[in-house]
Image 1 (cartoon, rainbow, N blue to C red):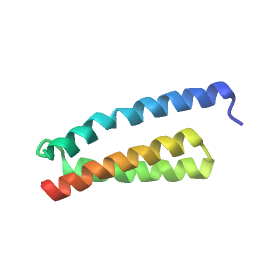
Image 2: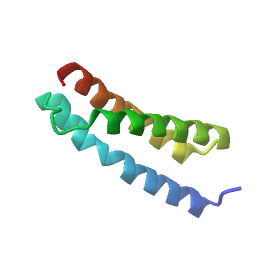
Image 3: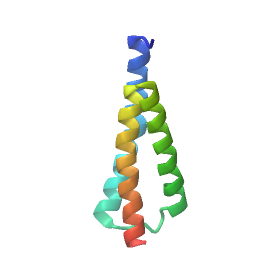
Image 4: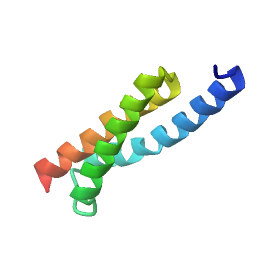
Length: 86
């Protein structure tokens, strides 16, 4: 059973690694410029996030579930912009 300190560490890590995608997603949405973004990197990253999300669900770890759900939405947004605007 995780302690409160362990959970807070997980939430802090989750917040930082999730928030780092917000500027990229915002820039991509605003400019529609996806030339510098690798399609395959985004595809494999999205698949990895899906696996982390499943892992978090199996463990019932809210830091993993929350962070990976939000990150997946951001990465899928970037990926869809890449597919649409090349």
